[in-house]
Image (cartoon, rainbow over all chains, first blue to last red; front, side, top):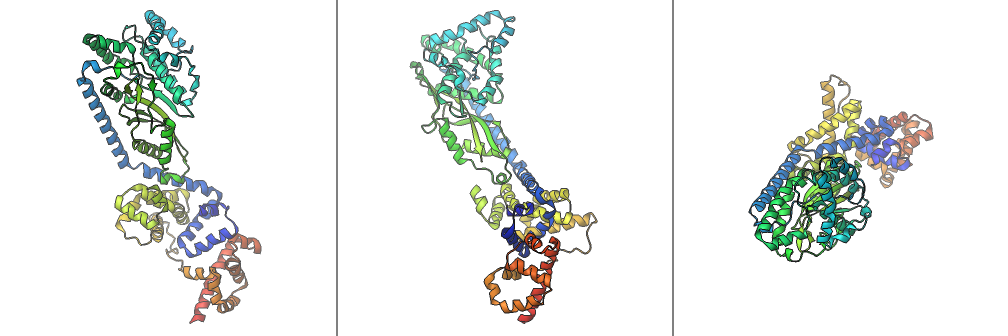
Amino acid sequence: MKLTDYISGDRRGRAARDLEAEALRDPFLAEAIEGLEPCGAEFASLSADLRRRIARRAFSAVRRRRLRVAATAAAVLLVVGAGSFAWLYAPPGDIAVEAPLPVGLVHTGRPSPAGPDSLETGTEAGTEAERMAAPSAVVAHVPIAAPAVAPPPAVVAGPQRQVVVESDGPKDWVEDPEPDDDPSSGDPIDAEAWGDASVDKEGSGNATVRAYGAEHRSGMTGAVGTGGAAAGEMRIRGTRRLPSSVPGEVPADSIRPASAAKAPADSADGQDRPFAGPTSARFRGGDLGEFRKWVQKRVRKPEAMLACGVPGRLIVSFVIDTLGDVGDIRLLQVPDRALADEAVRVLQTSPRWEPARQGDRKVPQKFIMPVDFD
Amino acid sequence: MERFVTEADDEELLARYRAAGRIEVLAALYMRYAELVYGVALRYLRNRADAEDAVMQLFEELGDKVRRHEIRCFRTWLHTVVRNHCLMRLRRAGKMPPGELPGERGDDGEFVEMLCEDDRRERIAAALEECLERLPEPQRRAIRLFFWEGCSYADIAAATAWHLRSVKSYLQNGKRNLKICLENRMR
């Protein structure tokens, strides 16, 4: 900005003279310079402040905010309504997917959970042994998942992942034992094996991938195959587990059962071939990196923000549901409201992905990704 | 949309705002003049807090004003609006300097343009030289350095050891005298 340069004294010689000549012709500029001259070098920061204030004022326009809140509320209502409808009316045998589980338990093999564990032993001794037994049971049932557990989770060292682990982890360890005494209730570990496997494959750069609801128990298909009674029992357990495994998770839990409930429809025949390995959701034949490029190409720094130099990296998480649509967009790190709006806008225009699969069944998958504005 | 906002001229943006009523467009337009508006406000109000306040308040009122007025040139219109807003503030605070009236500056843009361009100066070189000779020495020197040599105010001050304020006043007065002289000769 030439005026800023001039007032700060960075514009000299011919360039300064040209601006002065311009001021002789333009009373607006002349008066402004007259007023600004005493500011001197301070002017640069003063004007940046001013621009920021105007931008903030413009982008916090109440009307827009209300509209957005209303739209979000409507969307949530719709999804919850549809979800519960599907949940209630789905035939019992089809409910093969339980509520998606909070993933990100990097600490399986690590000693850290021993802390909360040892505290818990006083309350329930039996569950301890049960939990210890669980992984081996899972490995026995799901041979595919076993090798995925083996590689050390250190492969993913993204900082976001660390944060997630710390917030989610302990809850699972505390909550896991209580709900039912079914010996096959090693769900979190099962899911986590899946999650780690997908991360190993997809975790590149600073983009993190996590799996959801990929909970695929080999025992399940057996139960379905043997008879309706067993399947019914399964279903009840599924519904009962929902509140117990979920409460640690935050807001949009209400949405997830919906996406989970949709899964069975797509996977009616998936139960016949349950032993295929998990595959991550694909975006136009590429992975999360591809999607990030796609987003990066489309986000525009809001014009009003351009001049104020608000630094722009935000971290978003979203879920690719079984239909391949982007949903449950959450903002994990937001430097500025306007940037968040823009990122959400672009994410919502995403074309459909090819959903993640566990065997032949489509499953929702959660991704975490940075969006940069520069 | 964003490219449009950065490339469109003021009047296009204005039309866009009127059509769609989107405040971002208005903000983008206002942002182009934020410094100028602030500067003018500072000049009249002589106080940073008041000036900032005026800038924000004007932005609040701008949408309404834009809709009510017919604007041919946004830049000059905005200048008038800012000046009136500041004068109104001063008047309300009882601080209105009686001598200071808006629009005191004569419109000599055309004349300055002529002085700035070499070939246009050539055309009236004889008359110009004659009138320059009649100016007092400091005024003549300031005019020559600024328009002929392309020196900035600071350069002139450095070259002549005059105070910056004197440079401006010599230029201002020299310009006015020159114009009067030339107009008399042309007639």
